Image (cartoon, rainbow, N blue to C red; front, side):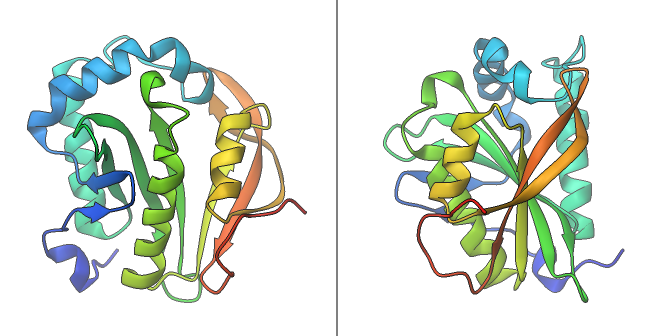
Length: 198
C-alpha cells in the first residue's frame, strides 16, 4: 500500500460550524476514556462488542498506534470531534477503507458521547469529513452503514446529504450479533442538501 503525499504532512484541524476535528493525541486518553466510559450503555448497542480492557491505557496505546499506522499508509484517518463552544471532546469520526485508482472511495464511521447527542454536532462532523474527502483527498464516493433501528444515525446521514442505497444483510458483527445495515452513500457531485431514501 502506498501513501499519498498528503498523508506525509501533519494534518491541520478541520473546522465546522459547531465542531473542530483533529487527529487523536496520546494525551487525549483521560478525556476519551471518561466520555466513552460514561456513555457505555448508550454506545454498546451500535458498536462491536467491547473488550474487558476497552478503556485501559494499554488498549488506548494500541489504538493510537493503529490510527498512526493507518494514517501513514493512507488507508484511514481518525479524528476526534471537539465541540467548538466548550472545547470538550464529544466523539470520534473515521474516514476509513480509503481507496484510490478506479474506486476513489472511503467509508465513514462515528460515535458520540451520550451527553453530546442531539446538538447537531455529528451532522456537522460528517459534513466536514465529507468536504475533506471530496476537496482534499479527491475521493469520488463516501459510504456509511447503519443498523436500521439506529434512527439517530439515519437522521445524521440524511441531513449530511447521504442517500440510502440498499440493505446489506448480516453485514457487521455489532455487540456480538451479526446485524443487517442500511448502506448510505454520498457522491462528490451530489447537490448539497438533505439526503433522500430510495
